[in-house]
Length: 323
Ligand code: ATP
Image (cartoon, rainbow, N blue to C red):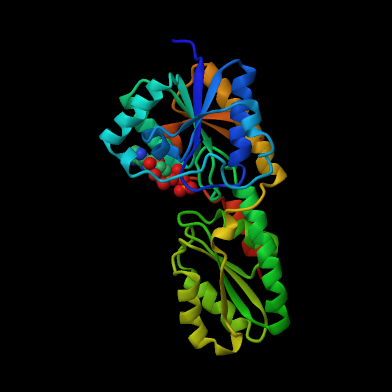
């Protein structure tokens, strides 16, 4: 196999706190191994549009504590087409890139998997998404920060809920997975969490509202749950339970932003070193993940096809405590 001399790194999909720490770790590890390294701005779209920038040690100074991504990120429809991927490959060749580190979610890995089947260029992935819904890793970069942001916001809302005896429906991110909702529910002592992984929660919600008139309730609603969005659920149940003084809060994009937690910085740093080590080791089409406090290598096709289980134990803890 050809010796790796030059690599590229980019961020893709939704931004997540800790992506900068990940870029920093990749750049500094590559330089420590005497590799040249380039950043690609705006994900796959920047790869197609030749938006490459040379990275030096100084380029990643003072970014470990910053949210978002200095390389910016994008969702690229063009990369889904063979013509788009051909342009991307031509640009990688033009810059003499031997291997690529992609920081993103399962969609980004899917794109990387397809690309490196068509063109002989190794990709290694780092899981960067706030949802924590990736198979093969206990944590994704950004989840811990987002969870702490949600917990802080709910704690504040709880003060009002308690003081006015109101029921709040608080919508949090999680179209396909309820990790943020469930863990935030346990951490804030919420009365109920509505999550995609559990069916038939209407009855439980009805029972809660019947039994708790004139007392406060925090109900955390993951976007992809099986009943509906927070506004919809609040409207439907609020009509029937007027004494609850139902209110809605959709936390939205504030969940993505902000300075990464110590855990996310640490995770991103370890995974960044592992990603470059894997490239030097001639690995390809794998994600570096974090399982039981150890670094693991997981093939892209497993991270894409596998479904991360929410965990019976967590559901049980929540069921027991949310009374
Ligand atoms: P998040 O979990 O934050 O949404 P993600 O990486 O899953 O992150 P996606 O928008 O699904 O985000 O994917 C990012 C990009 O990866 C897409 O905009 C597209 O350019 C590329 N991509 C995804 N799926 C494919 C595919 N099947 N073929 C080619 N490219 C793809």
